[in-house]
Image: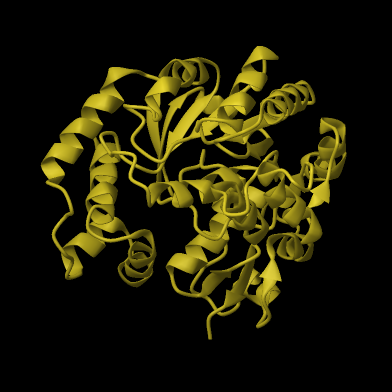
Length: 350
């Protein structure tokens, strides 16, 4: 019952303010219950009782349905270490897969036949190499990547821009059901949330944050896939791109990414070779006792100093495991001691 009460408070808060405002209020007041009782907040954008009743029905409908709150021990460490992790993450499927290494595959909705074939081939090969394939369930490259992973017997995760009770687009509902049975559906939106246009750019940061690297197969110059690639770079992830004919509109985005520093790849083995050192890196032993976040002698604050530092740099200085370091950074952020920066870096607040 306490878990449901906490979830209710989180959803009530997020129904009133956006993520950035919620984070500022949490750093000032503590947990969501304290924010709701102490802060002057606007009315919910939708009748909250209906949202809450719908969420409870969805959670009770299937044991594979669940929700992760920021700070949950199962919260994916790569996503937690990104600049803007969701405060609540709904999921449907095999929760035990969350600790596995993943690669995002994204691209155009108006993909060419060659692009669709390449997305399936790369997804299938990456799953045989031990990677989970993450994408957004959209038409085109996203759907082909999911299908390629499933056809090879691998795992795939789909991040949605609406509630998990009604996967979008409608044509991909059978595919979503298969992903739920063999992988995971994820969304930061409560059940019943419609697929509104602003949700999809925000969804892309979750795709990038869940993954160790991001492969762009085909993308027009203004493609949403390029947003995912930029967010992957901001999260400190490696970006890969497939080159294409210079006169093809669907290749111009990928070619531009390569000009800007994305790695040109021609096989899944190249992606695996570039990312495997991260996957194989042994996890250092976390501290035996959690430091006091408010102390100026906190070892993480001392390691951070007064210059921006990346997660890798802090891990090298402290020798902590990624999940322990990410959790402590989040605690310090909510208490107002540190703030995230683009590129997966952090700085101390003076």
